[in-house]
Image (cartoon, rainbow over all chains, first blue to last red; front, side, top):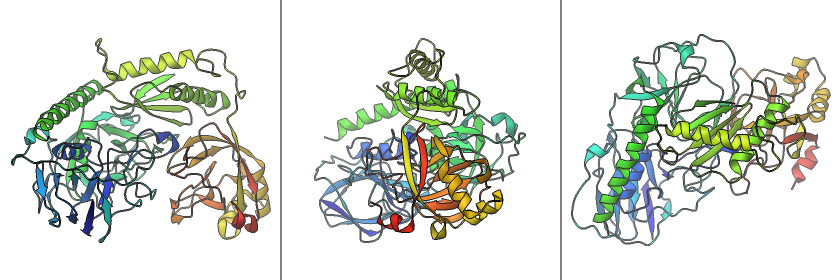
Length: 307
Length: 239
């Protein structure tokens, strides 16, 4: 069984939840920029949360399946296919996902998951490294992706309650933790509005706003960074590191976006704005645990529907 | 040993102020202790200079007792570090500076010419002849302080002072895989073709990173490195 890509869309890649365990060798985590959207889309078609799916940016792909299957679109709002519900697709039918109406990144999960070979334990595409996913690159018109032969029955029409999802917005307030150099930037990061620059990609979202000025001139020795790290290069315009971020960096770290709010960053498009608000580590970890609990309940609930 | 959070899924453990052999041995020891029989919930261990950053799953370290997952993971790391492991003394016990060396890796390099377009820049900076750049670079011994920037990229300490050269004002948009460069007081090798701002002095035919190989990265933190000059003919016929 396979998927034929009639139109690749904008930077459509195969992604799962990434490649943990190899950061010591300098290999980025990679994986879905919005891991919640990917996980929920997988739950909706009866997959394990880590199954490989398609990630696309602002414009979706046009696809054809060689066999009847079930798909689900995770993402804020797109033309062509409703979000957050399973959709039955017939063999030979074309599924055309158009432009994003709201949000930036969409995830199309397919029953059984996309069966490209794993590289270093993951099916994620790492574009800069040129490995993982489908030939280490974004999909082109005419590519054919392998799918396992699975069948899933879709009983009736339903969708999930949006309240279990992140509070997606084009102008979110994103919660952050203090970073190693937060104090050197005073309070300038908090409350000010930053705009998402078009130079953003899977490595990081580049923001523009009033420049953040560091009080210290001391050069820093490189140390680990993570998706969510807000680093500030000498021009004072912050970069929020995302899924394909390098593993170590030497720029000052003004803050770290908390893990439950990373999906809000992933769904920002160029021109959207964001403000940052500080929370404590204890609060961030409480939110992360509650969020995992909510997703586990959702997965259990959906498992009853998909047999 | 001090702890600081890096977001809500990682903790940075700092093991000293400088990057001397004592600190390097503490870093290697903690990495070895955490990676031999990796505790459930520890996802990644990233060493860089005097720090070891531990990525963890807060769900696994949610052990109650009025403590956060962060406090629990710090306690586990502290206990493991104090205990030590095969061949490594626990932290706080007598340290053996330079006693326990990492592996020695020899990297063949074809210096200059089209492979090293910036040899003249480095020579001018140090008031050297181009042949001195090669003999100084290949004559020194280096240690891997960090692996990152891109997969398998080693940050090497030990560059002779006369070779210290600032990065290019404008980075190259593409540096070929295997390029050996100098950035300030550091030297390193680009494992994959990528943009880069270091001064390029040569190229190695060795693959420093191969995702299909295990381990994928040729070098790890603590390894010792020597460079060996080879001819263009040797480069082309290298297997």
